[in-house]
Image 1 (cartoon, one colour):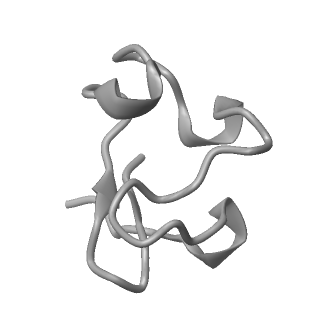
Image 2 (image 1 turned 120 degrees about the vertical axis):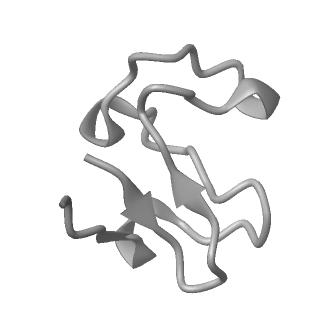
Length: 53
C-alpha cells in the first residue's frame, strides 16, 4: 500500500526511498522510526494511506 504525505510525496513500498537507503520492497510500517518525508521532512504520523484501485 502506498502512503501520501500532506506535501504530495507518495511513499511507494515497491520503490523504497533511495535517499534514505530504504530498499524496494520495504512496507511503510517497516520504515525506521526516524524516517521522514524526503521532500518536506514530515514524520510518518502525517502520512495517510492511498486508496488502491
